[in-house]
Image 1: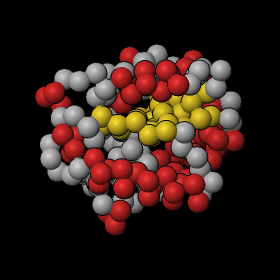
Image 2: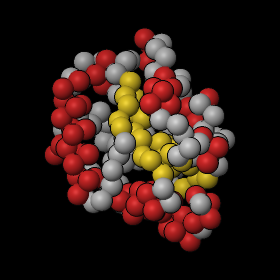
Image 3: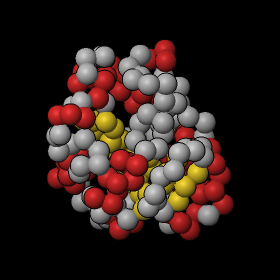
Image 4: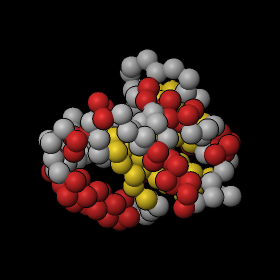
Length: 175
């Protein structure tokens, strides 16, 4: 079975400016490329799991999201980073769907297609709902990013860059 790294998008892959759907407003977080390469070197598959309630709220369309996602995947590929798949919840919170984090619908969809070793997998997120998803989906390890208080994560850092620097020095954590 393969190890996996599950990534939130806004706040992890890119700086979260709120409801990002335009290429010109998308900024990769500092240290992200090297962090992802570190996981790739350790034979992890990479997956994106992202709540995109801006679609459900009518702030942007699914086509807008797909255009940005395709651009993001190409930019990551140019950096030698392959994302196995991107999964998103387009629903507004009040729709109470099974795919919105911390519900496990997106991870369930991934597990339907891939045999993954969740005991040795990681999730990186910047909200409590991300870390709760890891727990709900039985992903054993999680990393909380940001200054807000997030409980129950395995590791916690203020920035992606700090996370990258720590894991470079402590690669045994992601063996």
